[in-house]
Image 1 (cartoon, helix red, strand yellow):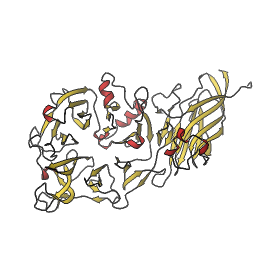
Image 2: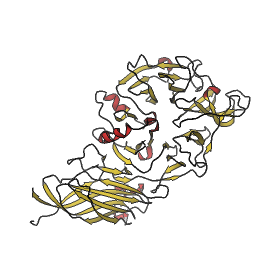
Image 3: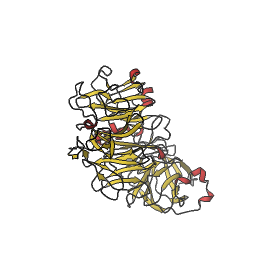
Image 4: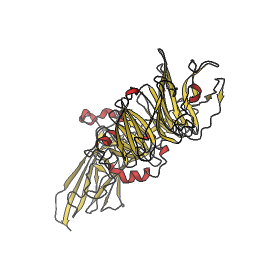
Length: 533
């Protein structure tokens, strides 16, 4: 073969566009990742290892398996973590204490049969004159709602809150509606907004939203309470799945429709503002407010409310567009009651938990087509999430509550993976003879494998390398946002000699994450281009 110069191909910010499993062939934008796991797109646009987790629960958490967590504001500057798992309710984080439910006459606790852990917890308030009292409400289908509040003294009135926080059935502290075809008041979704408690999906009545008296979230029959019946609004068969508040509007997510009411803060002037037909929400706990928008899971992918309203005629455009087929294949096999989500503002990502993966959707900035940068976590396996007021991300795990932090999974290592799309260097008909590759990484003392294969083969050649600490002062700290890493993290260029040949090449990096952060800044591949075949 004649002597030919090496031709470079550079991929700056590899994986910046996130995972793309829809376009597996040649020609995919090299900023996508064809495969990636246990990764995030960091704030500087690099594909990086996710953080790990460690238990914060030290006692009482064995086999609690919290599938619901909520941070309750006690109105005194303190907060209480409420969780539910293993058909029980718990208070506390470091120590998880099983909760009981107060008797109707306030003389003791009563036995409450709990058969599932799909509770939704919402916090509202009760106000009498100038006195405010926090109330938390737990709802799930086939269960009587529970209220968490300051309990009355034995023999006291239901609103003499003097005996510390605890749980009661909702019917014990107020009255609930019995009309409009409701024989048992067992709602499956709730919302605290506009000074009221809103509850829906009650027993066989799937299309009515009930709202409480203003500033008395336990009273659903007094003056100012009422209901909104959607049977005249939605003409097809449907049911309410979730409720939300956004931009002073009441958002009612049905399974196949979305109904929006304006002026919900003035119930006498509430008005139907919009309906979205054919697109709805299939999982109650997928709804998250990200500040500027609402994100929810539909039967055709993950969507934002703003785009859905704007693009009613474009039902295929969604945040999960680049992983749609694989994503929906998993979603369609899920029990939607077990789908959980969270918006974590410090890292600007939305997490969606399924039994197979955690999908990490970056919402810092969307791609040009409106989709989100997506990565997958395949070994962290949380049961639930909670973003706390002090900017922690908590995970429900088998033996209690864990914090998303560090770079180990409860003391163990985990594997970060990133694979490029299939690269043809601009011409798939030419044979490539790659000679070397320079990998620019951020990380110290991280061992990783560089893999490469040709022409769609899964038979990868492998070389191993280890990043070592270097002097970061010679690099622009502001340019690379080093502050997001620990002081020992360094930018390093590592050179690997490659061999073999083929028309198409794919590069992979697999790193063992065991206490240190790691991300890929750039790939430079140098190759001799052969004859046209």
